[in-house]
Length: 273
Image (cartoon, rainbow, N blue to C red; front, side, top):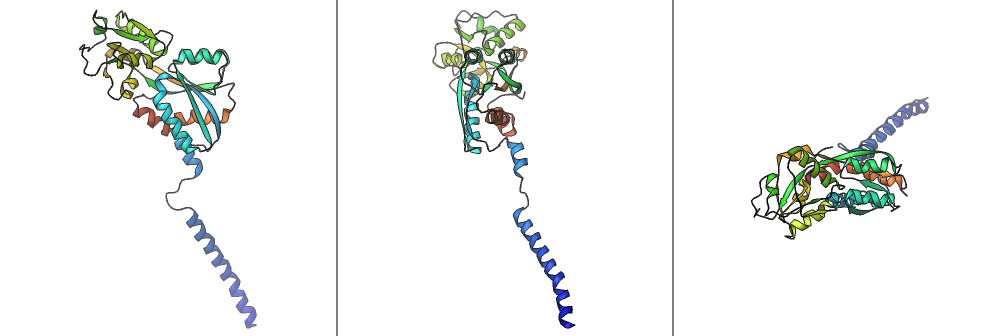
């Protein structure tokens, strides 16, 4: 009788102890403030993917995308991101001619539309940034340029982007909106070429993006002008239909648009899409 009674007490006691043990383990495994992998991934854009892709991106994105590529690779050790930077119109031509690329990031919507209309894009492109023009001049602004109208002076050697390039299309919009007829001594195929001519002293001024002036780290000064608000460029990014690794390509485009990617873009001077 006594033995049976003692055993009946031990059974619930064991159950209670086991339950307490499981509760303790659960508490240890999930400390306060811990974030689940899914919520962490959605906030930062990290997806723990692997493989290798090539990203064709507008020249004005060179510094920021190089940084984003390195950050993405750190978050995804098995991933490798290669870049090809040039004027958006040149990149479109290369893609149309069969150049191997997985992702295209354009400095305007018009060049992205050229790929969509020929069924070279996979799905819809997503906007991720905006940008506006600024006048780049030599440090100290020796020509005393303060406005768009000052660029028409006979003693000012001006360079701009060619019209097919997004920065050139934006320049044309600014001219039309202001009624000012600019006469550049040369028209370049990328905004980085325009910036390079001002940096090297081959030109007195150039119309580039705000982000290019900021990224020059003091090698040029920037002169903002009111008319720039008439030509805001929106930057879209999309996966290409011929991508050999569409999963990784989509992961990178999502990273660019994530909070982590937007932080890098904002620091470089890009606006929100």
